[in-house]
Length: 207
Image (cartoon, rainbow, N blue to C red; front, side):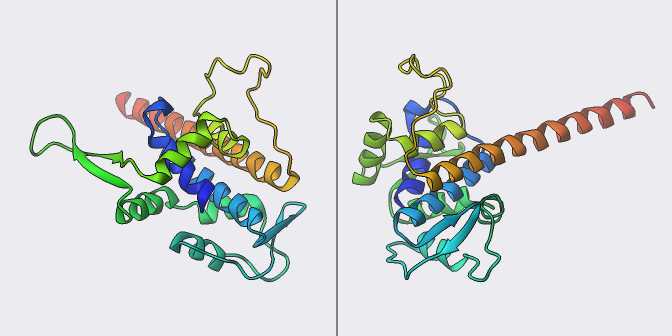
């Protein structure tokens, strides 16, 4: 899953600046996987439904899992349903996979021998490929990064106030739009829970 893997790498790259929430990232990774499957001809998008296509050529276990999870009987799954179902804990799955492949390493924060460990990227061809796509503002990767808040403050796009890259493919555009909507929905849920939690705390303070 080239785009999904590259997106995960970009979120850990020092140039990303903004930390990315695991829920947001998981939704975007599910969208990236779907775009990879579209590019491979494994699925097509009919309106907002994901329609399985020919037999896939797969090269990693996460791709196998993604294809195995496709709904193969009509009515096929909607894009937004795929994002929420497939995206559940997906960022953790990618972190585990990259650690197992030697592309991520854990280092202790600071000099303390018992300090918390942080994840760092290893200098690999995959990392260099992802960074190259990012620096070239490759439209699909850049659009997905924007969805999770990476790159939206970059000053080098004065000609596009909304900072949205041009996506030539309608199916890819639909997936990216669904990712944006899902991330916004997740943020709305967070805000609602925060408000409810604050109200509950205030109630107990008044007792």
